Length: 276
Image (cartoon, rainbow, N blue to C red):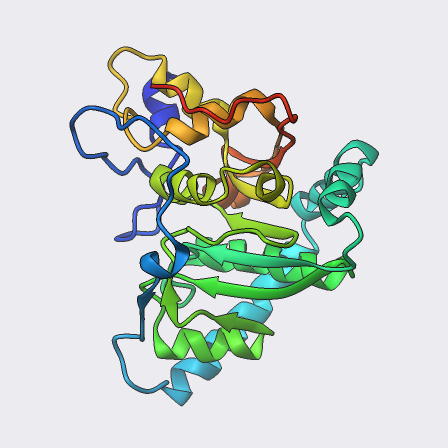
């Protein structure tokens, strides 16, 4: 894959459901520090733009989701996905994050419009199937600022909770948490890491999202446009184990290309400093 093609693989384009890069603001990259803002200061109250759910749209969307979940469940992609998760090396990484806890909550950021596009439906379907398959996955919380009231009702019918605040990715992992963030913007991953830039918190995180190795590759390209909002992503590469998701077929490429599992294991001697 060419460098330009790899750039196009990273971030969500909300207009047409495809994936493209979101241009960062130009300027000097900020030096990272551990002086985080409090989570409460970053939480912005949120409500859908429409006031009420549309029953007809709701029924149609539930049907679409049921079809999509079934399609993913019977796919070769899903079978390969399960085989990877059940691999002893990866499973041990999950159990290490769980520790003495019985459940690992799942937080989904940036899922997009499941009513408008098939790609977000594929991504949500995989998350729901994971919860059904693995008894150690607990409650699922979802947030995207573009979610409608109709979509919120459908998400709730599927067993998910829709957050009433925009955390901007800054949830502190005080307990084992699977952050499910396929094709989010680099800034959102960076926000998550910044909010959890402590030994104990990082060890509580499993991240499903864009490949950090790909971000590192892009920042090494002299003309790369991925030049901002990656300080903690690059720093985390030093102590992150990454396992690439195989898409298998074109049907699932748009939803899961360049996606990886990430597990973080900083040592006590590790300096949690970001690259300048």
